[in-house]
Length: 234
Image (spheres, rainbow, N blue to C red):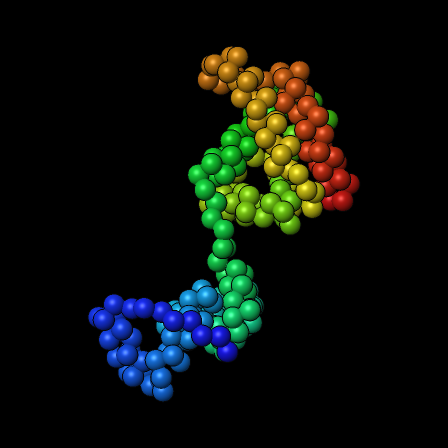
């Protein structure tokens, strides 16, 4: 076992000794080792206790709701998360990601999704007014790649299915394209859409056929391909 010497101010050293004794540790070294393990695991003991108790309460409430026959209650599926936290299986703490996403979606990414919906709504409105059936199929919003763009897909689902916003938007049912590179394609389309909108600079302007096709461009080929596949599959 390796040894590391650490110098502490007198007041902090005294706090460590008192805490080690109060917690029932035989030596200060045992206390420090456990404190470091908790630090590197990302969760302290009391954080684990709080999470375990919250999950147990959630499980009980879920069981009551299920017993009462309340609609919309799915099967409780967090047993593996509860067990890993309860037993201190640090390698499995990442199962918490099933409950709470580790990565946050910043303002730039959320604005990107809102702009994307506005762009598709513009193209869809144009296709409707032009009565172009083929173009209408091409400008359905297909979604994001569920493997590599899950944060974007989750936010889109939150807006559309959770908050019930953009209900006028024609979209694919699942929003999982199973196709990498959707975000990159959308960025190219958004750049062209903003340039076109800037040309007219008037509220309520409706795109024409050439402008919709210009927005789709080469990047939109992936959108068209995914929409064509969804149409055949569904």
